[in-house]
Image (cartoon, rainbow, N blue to C red; front, side, top):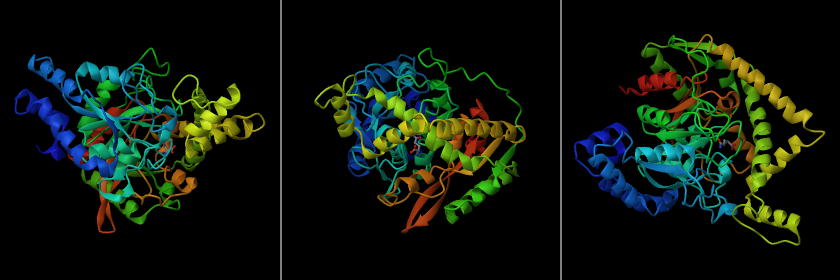
Length: 471
Ligand code: GLN
């Protein structure tokens, strides 16, 4: 079976024509996992009922009740809950934790009869950009195993990139779907904030978090997005995507030129980005330089708002309600000991930063200012989208880096420069395979990223399909 060229539509056609059974497809993926996961570490665990799920899906198809997603093998980021299944955010603090309910997205996908293959590696609680912060080891890049798969959804991106699943789910708080997708040469969609329910997603930064698909094609991302989106009573910020003006598109791409002039952008990444813009011009799109002077603020704003929310969200892991418990002298000491032993370094760092920026005396200096700047950034996006359909940027300023290369936290934070603004503004963004660069005789992928106005995933899909030549 040619897993490399499989898509949701092709697989559906094969099922309907009875060319292949769900069991055979699932077995083919399990075989790949067996061969490659030892080295890549994309999956942290394979679910024990994969075969039963495949058989259920087959029954649905045979009864003529299948949908386009029935029997489609999914990998799931290890911070999305499935009832009765192990889930742990790649953290020691949740070492033996079992999901107590289905995430909204899982509920939706179960109805379609997809097959959940296993849970994929991530930076602990999604905090990072390389999966090096996982308590269970780094995920290696399928294109060069000396390099990272990106993060935090590194396992989900590597799984799809290396044909260990047809599609996967990730979460994106500041780029965690798009950046690993770009490192692994696949498509990553960060939907509009609130368009996909956060119910059952372990919270990182609640005003930024969103679940989205990682796929080989834009068409597949669209199919999954259309299935998992929608209002959910369990997430008060979720919505039906209907608000906002749905203007006709003008085929105009805006490029925040001066933002591309900042330090630290790899020359080959820039060159690939220019080539991608040229491809779009050839396809009949106008590429126009735009000014977005508040964009450079977005990284600082993100690294204040995100840890503030992290410090609050992660206070629930106290050794009493969930997971690990370490006995101390008294209750407060229990908390200290459990959290000290259970959380890794980066998670503790962010809890400390977040607590600091929210503490009295510093709240006005940091958190409040960041919120004000956030509003400015949002307004700037709204203004710009009056004239252009999409904004284009590279996904990451650098291609995949070597494992251990970015050992100080700041250099990793800086690599989030092009992705965080979408989360700050809440707008949808997509990373598309945008060429390769050569390093150590290996071809490393780079990403072409597009941002659209709120609830205009449709524009990302139409632009993305023309860019990748999908019909
Ligand atoms: N790399 C970013 C960070 O470290 C984004 C993480 C995410 O989107 N979950 O915070």
